[in-house]
Image (tube, rainbow, N blue to C red; front, side, top):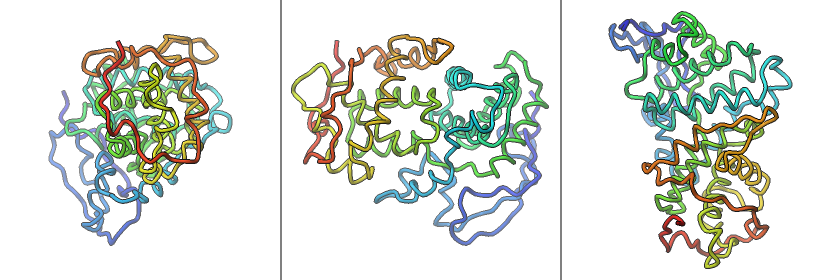
Length: 353
């Protein structure tokens, strides 16, 4: 496999936000590090207190308190909610969903961390918000964005040739590199952004979630990426709705916990949302979650998207995709009176048999 750098950036690499005092330096990388950023890349090095901001998977632990910096950045990295109507002429939401489902399999094949997957989807949507793409090039956009996200997030990123191979060599190495450069330029090299996974990790810690709730929340979070309707919604709001929905899914067959107790004052404090604010998002998440779990058809083309369900049906993820979903969302889940305590802080729930 070729040991040369995958990409040589023609422009300065800018950190996501202009925080702190910065100095500019040129980093010369020796050949052979296939996952590197390139030779002679000019980088803006932030002040020490903000240097770790570069790593998206650490965002939720670096900024404690109310996490206000996360809310600030998410609004500046949000895709256009109606880019399919305004920018795209040859692709549809169903094609996007099929691409996302396939990228789940690619991430599994190369054992990528979940943050890489969520960053990939963010880059795809932001790119498609600005650049029209032919349907024949949509998969190329997908692998190019995953290549960028892998270089950003992974310790050992897959090589360009591996991404060509996973597409059955539909695209040549040069095409992937050209699209990578195009994506980076379109995004303005602004790669740091909090995703649904960033906020979800934070909120689950606040909820003191057990492993069952964590895995189920991650499952619902990945299914949420299939929905074009959620593209323009803040990642923080999606993550909050996921935590609320996951609690109901786990306990819906029991009567010991009232639905209104799931959203307590602590969750309200750290998310900034009342459960009533999450009703519409919960409904969208619930619909896509049920469709994936029940192997129903999704979208106007009536397509089945099995990758996420199959991934979470394994013992590694406690088979959370096999949990029988509830038939409806009770109105009691949504209110503006946070409970004093959450039952998930006191009880460890076994998966229903």
